[in-house]
Every structure is written in structure tokens, then in C-alpha cells.
Length: 265
Image (tube, rainbow, N blue to C red; front, side, top):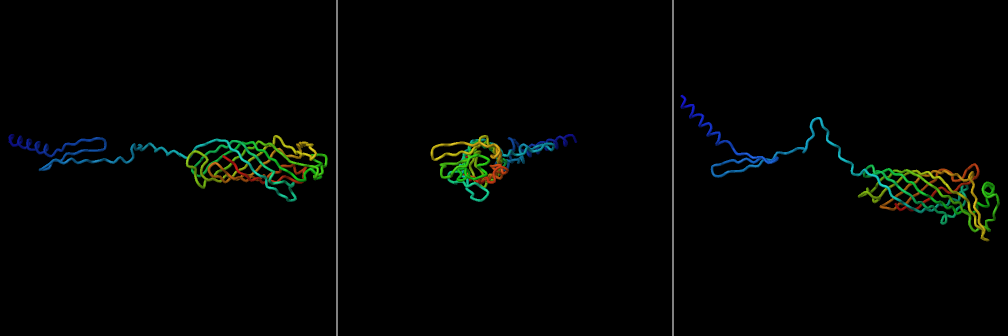
């Protein structure tokens, strides 16, 4: 009986050794050697890693970063022309000689690929070349105190030097390719101006000239709506002043409110 048990155990060990197959693992790859009657075959198995490294049940996967979110600052400048308005509510201006010059700083916060917020801080110069203000009775009463014959005047202008701050939203028709001012966009915003220097100036044909500064008749603060259509680093803009440049309690007429021009960003 003992002899039979010994023979059975030996047979089992030999069979197990014959069945066992050499295995080796390298990372996610498992190599198995299978022996056939004529040759040995190596089989390779790869285990898929669904999300290396996978977060545990109590962990949350980190949110991807928004690569379009950034901010940038740079200088800009521009020139505009004041559109004349010969209506009864405005002094007559000469459009080609009535200009606006801007120079300042623009800061932009890029929120997404097609949307941004921005702000501006700038110096603005306005030159309104007038035709008949110096002979208009109410203007003479409040500003000059003396009536001038228009034929004797060579020039009559109203000028103001302003500090302006504004804010705007930017919508992109063609998004920027990098962190710059390329692409095609539309800006819509508002700005407020403080005129730290404002005066009416006349120059006589005889060579004489004079300046009139009137704090009551000329408003120091104005507000405007502004729109820009831009591509790359250039933009066409339109500015509409929706407050009076002149005090309506002192002067019955005002300056034309619309300026159009080009800016370089």
C-alpha cells in the first residue's frame, strides 16, 4: 500500500512539472513559454491600464487648465476726426480741421478663446475748429465778453487736454493665435474724460491772439460710448459723447458728439 502511494505522488509531481509553464513579467507585459510536440512558443499578453495613474475612490481628477486665460498690457495711440453737425443744437465746426489724438495704455484680460475684458487709461487731445462761436451772442456773453467780426478772425478753436479711463468687452470673430493682438474682434465700451485744460482760442488776421478759459461754461467731465472693429494691431473706432461738453445752463449750443478714426494697438 505504501508503495502504491509513493508511485502516485511521484506521478503527480512529474505531471505538474510538465504542465507548469515558465512565466515572466515586465511592466504591463507578461511572457509565457508554451511547449508543443515540435517547438516552444512564446506568447505575450499586455494588460491595459485604463487611466494611469487612476485616482482612488476618495480622490477627484484635477481639472484641465484653461490655456486661453491670461492678461496683457501695452501702449496704443490713435487719431480721429470730429464729424461736423450743422444742426441747431451745435456750433458749426470744420470737420477736416477738427481732430482728436489719443495716446495711452490698454490692459486686456483674456477670459476664453473668443471673449475678453479690458480697460484703458489715456491722454486725449480735442481740437474743434469753429466758424461762428465768437460772434454768437450767448457765447460772447458767457465766454469772451467781446464780440468779434468773423471776417476779422483767422482762427477760432476750442481745445481740451483730457485724462480718460475706460472699460470694454471684446468679442472675437477670429480668435488670436497667441498672446497678442492678432485676430479679428469687436470692442464695446464706455469711457470718462476729465479735461484738466480747456479753453477757447482766437487768432486775428492782423496777428493778434487770445485765450479764454471759462470754468462755468465748459464742463470738466464728459462720458462717451466707444466701439472698435479691429484686426491684428489696428482698429477703426467710433466714439459718441453722450454728455455735454458745454454747460447747457450757460450756453444754448454744444459741440458735435461723434468722433471716428483709427487706433494702433
